[in-house]
Image 1 (tube, helix red, strand yellow):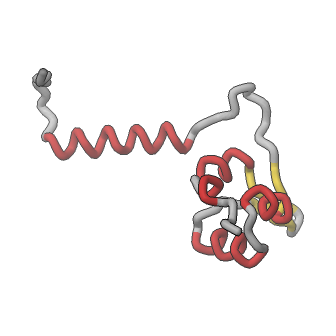
Image 2 (cartoon, rainbow, N blue to C red):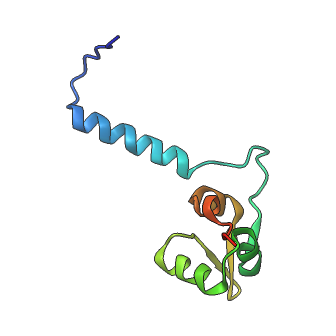
Length: 94
């Protein structure tokens, strides 16, 4: 069954607005408990993703992993790691 929506907005503009809204929602996913997000150091991210320090640094430099520098140390939010999708293919095939 086809639903008809009457709107003054062009089809492509409506699609772009919906896509922007979905991206905004995905970027603002909070932890369910509402507690502050856990900060992970590089070695913890390496263990979580099963990747080398070099790979983590390359992904960070490419912008695939968001990071924060606090007192010259690099930290990653656990939610950013989980939302990046990189953890889905993180286990190396042996």
